[in-house]
Length: 375
Image 1: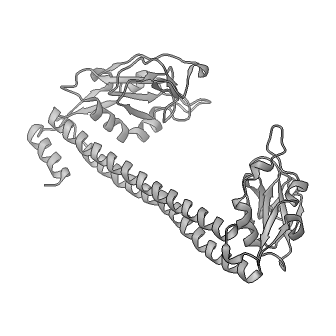
Image 2 (image 1 turned 90 degrees about the vertical axis):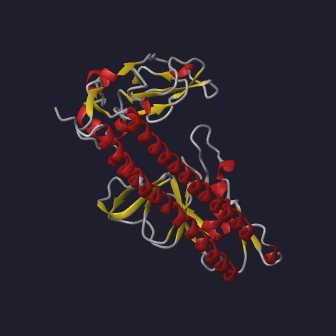
Image 3 (image 1 turned 180 degrees about the horizontal axis):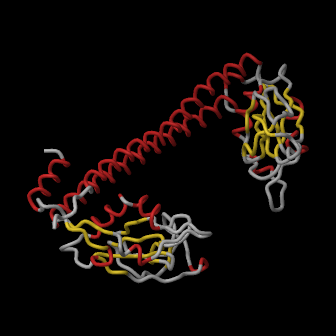
């Protein structure tokens, strides 16, 4: 018998006329909460603190609630977001914590799963979207909760706990696979570009300034809207109707996120927080230069006293190993394949997780879809 059939059989046997619904405030007690200042929190604190976010706000050395509790985010971007907490914790002032009044009649974990299944509806209908989104406690406590017999609640919790564990295991496995591929790729890239014994005696080390001309960026505010990307050190900022350069290049940040290296072979505009390079193609292949620049820790060249900065003078002195062009092409071909493999996994990971979550949410909805009691 499937899990769905087993639940349906239990419901039909134990409550053939439907299920009674009760307000949250009838079946749950409101728990303690207290405001903490940011300075009171510590990563080394013994107990987690939940407030108005989706995850922990921090940690604190005291707790104001035991585990087996439900919390609602009361204000802010995630107002109405529901969490279940199974350990001692501190409930902050911007949360509404609850626990069942009687676990022999209404299990807290079952109530949580029902609320989680209705979370988007709660957020859409009960959250007031003013300057700061907020949900009223009185509205929370009026939410109708189905109260099937205890065996039905326990079986649903058992099934959904199992689904949750499977989802967490899948996420961990896929992320571990991605991390392993990234490390393998980074190792192989370094072997090809720096520690390639086959090229010993066939590599000429040159200064970056010998193989490229580094160029400053310009303001784009007076340009018209278009489809040409505008790059800053953080990535694409806007799109305009003109370009500053249209040949293969490597963009190197000047200020800000100085580890962001970009390879472009289509028209673009760049602002003054990032340099572009005119590359001497007879000496070095642009994609080869890009792969080499990616392995450098440019933070060691930072000259900024506050905001990270790289000067043209320092960049021009970076030493680049330059093998023959044919060998550069071979290395680029290999690294392109590795890069595509890692990117495919990076794209596939969220897609796979999304599909599994949708499957889980659909099944959860089926399990928690109760008919009200006929009166």
